[in-house]
Length: 93
Image (tube, one colour):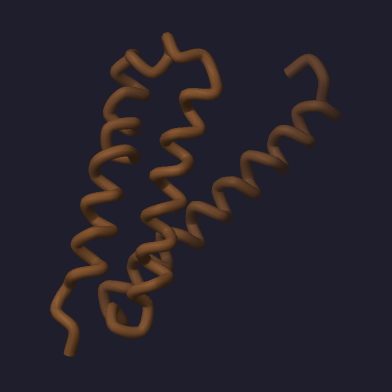
């Protein structure tokens, strides 16, 4: 760390993003217990992850082929839309 002030700013941003993802994860967890009430919210969360996956293409596309990123990208662009589709059609009581 050569610039403590710049590090503090970036650290704050990373903590914010981590908090947002923690909130999304807690919503997904709550959805396991309250699916009928949270169905639309959970579909929204899965759509947000999909859009985030698409946003990766606005950066260095060569990075997307690296194994550390490729698996996440596949889950974001394929797995989460499938999960959202399943949530939308899950048995309604």
